[in-house]
Image (cartoon, rainbow over all chains, first blue to last red; front, side):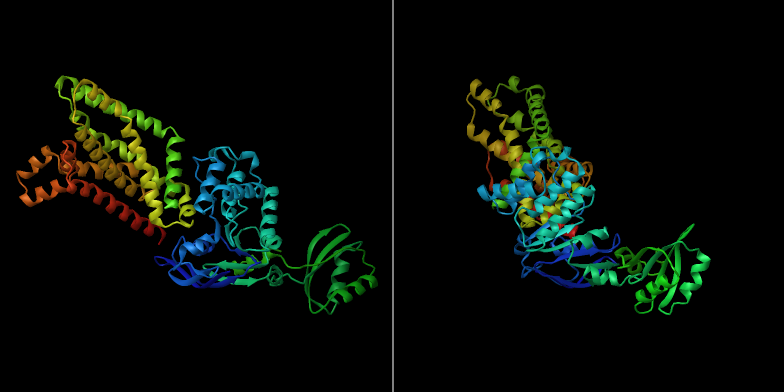
Length: 314
Length: 243
């Protein structure tokens, strides 16, 4: 649905997007991650045809964005960053304007507005002036605008920015549900969101793609993935240390937390350490209160990739 | 075509949903009346025409038209809605024309509301209605030319005040170019070709013959070409914003 090939954008000498290539097919939700200023919004603006790329080609639903901009734009729903909206209109007036711009008139327009008003929970403010809306409602009004023509491709720039946790959850569920029959790209800073809604994620840093994979694949890249965290009651640190050191499957380990009569330690395994660890526990009569195998967290991957020089937060 | 009208409708709605439209119309009518009756001594002249009425239009438009046009693009830039508008399936031309037409229709409405003065002059005497119509046509074309300048300057900046001032300066230049007191002063030292050249781009020269009832296609063409040039420049500026 969306094909981006060798996309580059320079502003003067500054290279905002540097040779980016990826594609999104129907039924996929692509999460766009990256620190501020990494080039996420610039990329999205080029896909929607707002900014012309310096070099590279973009096709949306088979139409080249540079050669057939109107055909491509008809198939895109776009929520720009900060959800801009005409402040001198009512929510209904704004949606009606957007519907007409998308070629919906009469009963098609009414049906479109009814549908997005329901999807985005706007019934309560439908005839209110946009000026008087809270940030959450403004944001959802702009999101509604992106959905009004039921596009095949959705480009959402920080769709959950400024929403409260309940609204974030709703929007995330909505994106995931729509993802089944559309191609969606959305950018976010919130990593749980990627795990919750995306089928694939791209991490972009300084204009370049630095990671591309399913959330699970990305998490496996975490320096902590596969580590075992164990909490043992009834032993002191002094007694425990030599017992762990004796284990063959332990590459290295460190104490995470220490309370009287309770020690938590983390083990970097060499192969599968679990059976040996449990056996040692039985032999030494540890009272194991908690045992967890780290899946790896996207936060750690994100930090490790975009800030390679800093120490991971333990 | 339909897109242009959708955008125009929205812009017109924006005028009338805020106090701007009403304040503008009231001030326009008050000032037009003041200049015609008080300064222009409409009744004392004892002539059934609208010369003292049209005479002041360039000076009224100098401030009022930039005020009406200053927000057209500046507001879009400030709110960020330009990104929304230009990623919809419209061309930049449709957006520019839509905005221009909306404001022009608005100015036409304000101008239309001066009809009582036509009624008055018709009641008091036997005016030449062709000449009056011609004056209105010239006034409307001049408003359109000034408006296209204001539309262009509003695309330069997100600041409406800057956009207003720039538009006033350009319009003032066009007024002074062909205004006899200025051309007289210039002709004392400048070569004739320069004086003629300046006079030919001045709005006063072109508006003057129209308000006297002479429909010269060159005058209409002058205003039309100012409009076309400014709208074209506007599309260039919009493209530059995005590059």
